[in-house]
Length: 241
Image (cartoon, rainbow, N blue to C red; front, side, top):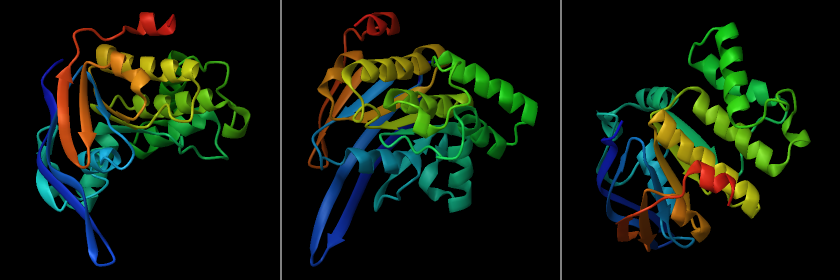
């Protein structure tokens, strides 16, 4: 399923630091399509994380519009935005954001519980999704018993379980070694290709650029290039990279 899943126009965000104003986004236009992995790249401080926060309803821009899944995001109430994120968005962060007391299976089930999924169904969905990311033998392990790569795969399973239309990944490989980073980006690519999600991945890791359908470079709050790749590595190629 192709077509724009999210479109933003004129996003502007600034922060006051004492008497100075720091412009983080300077009237940025952006869009991402279903079935594609869009990589947003740039150095630290370029505005990448602020952009993903504005696109996903986590941070209100000072100006600009975000149309996500046909809805004008920033005209909605905070409660409506929360519900939109719950129903449509999956999030993956560099710090994993797992609950220390919950097992891998429970980490996934809790999101489905908030969506109103029945106990049996959410258990089945959690097992199925964790198995899909290679953690079928780690269902009952807590974060302290998992490696960094395994923690990130739990976070990905949690994001994928509710079958989101939009997946936002903020530096998902920064805490991982090269091998685990390739596993993670492979799973994100499969989410786009096999599930039809629009996957937006923010990173400064140039190793990942070859795996995207589209690469947008951001610097000093501005889009400096927007390139569609002629070839992105396939999940099979990634697995053997």
